[in-house]
Image (cartoon, rainbow, N blue to C red; front, side, top):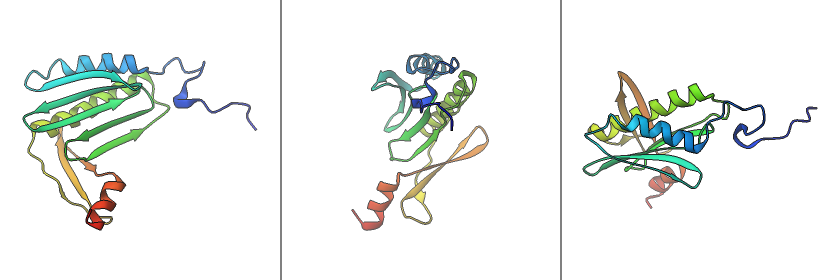
Length: 149
């Protein structure tokens, strides 16, 4: 068996390609420059970098602690998450750009939640650069919707 211990999010001496939350925040701030028509707020909180994109009543929040996971969540409670503890700096930058594109598409668009299949709840289908991206509700929210709470 290997002597290698679990390293949270790949934080180890051999992970020089790891992206910190501060580096992710810098990436987000660069990606936000082109969004003059949106209200954008960036911050570093609880070990994660985040950017909130807003227009009128619609908003989407992109967050990441660096290289471990990436998330976008909308005002409707729909989200898309990716957990990837092995992403390099280049891959992290690409993933962050993709999640910013998803947030922008939601805030600028008019997509509305549609009834989901299976465990109740709803989905949010977005057209992002010619591709369909589906955001879902967390399981707890879907279960509450099924139970009528």
